[in-house]
Length: 313
Image (cartoon, rainbow, N blue to C red):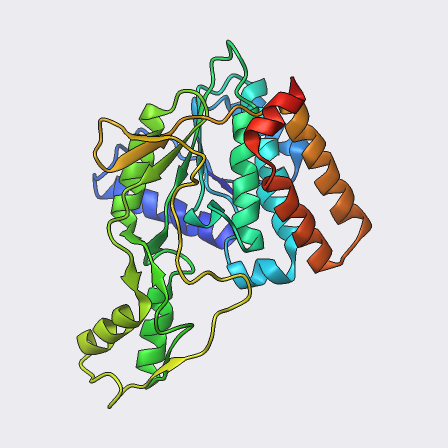
């Protein structure tokens, strides 16, 4: 287990140790937790060299949409170049499987966070090395109830304080999944990984955030609008009204698991992708203009992948 967040990493190890003492997992399993930043390229290569993992599940990313709108350079350094470091290290040291957590916000992105995750999907697909033993995939899904940054704890705290419960827009909708559902489907999608596919989880029907707020107020024993106000505060920077799970250009079919769909890989050359990464790095190195950086990022991911492939040839 590696992370840059020491508190989260410490609590995760404590959870595993409690489960081991309770007999829920084998006490013979050795738990190793290390503080490492994915931005440190040499450290990632040293980790892969020293521990030689068979499977890597990569979930490290800056995820909060409004915060990334304010600091797109940080989102790019961490989400894009940090992920590239992990992928390159996995390939260099013969990791058998690399599974990356992506997001529905990577589809036709309007915000920095979603655009960086789309860029990482393209980086992964450009590293589809012929005859390499590694099998890579990205798993794309929506919001996870109760996860870090979820709206649920925010609503709970607002209700505890007597309101108001705030929603960005009365008509906004999101896909939701529970933590156990998401974790199990991500693990299963890893089994299907073969040639840098993008997997999409069946998230069911989108949920209106307003209805979620109303149900939570009811469950807390209050009457919405009478005892607890629900207030509309407006969309945050970069936020969409509705999320999507697939790009039109991607051909999609169902796997043996009815809840997991797979998109056929898009052919992107490593040379073309590296050129784009160089342009992106040059931009964040030369300017702190957030609007300019975001514009550059969105431009680089909106090129037609088929055109990219032809130019690379």
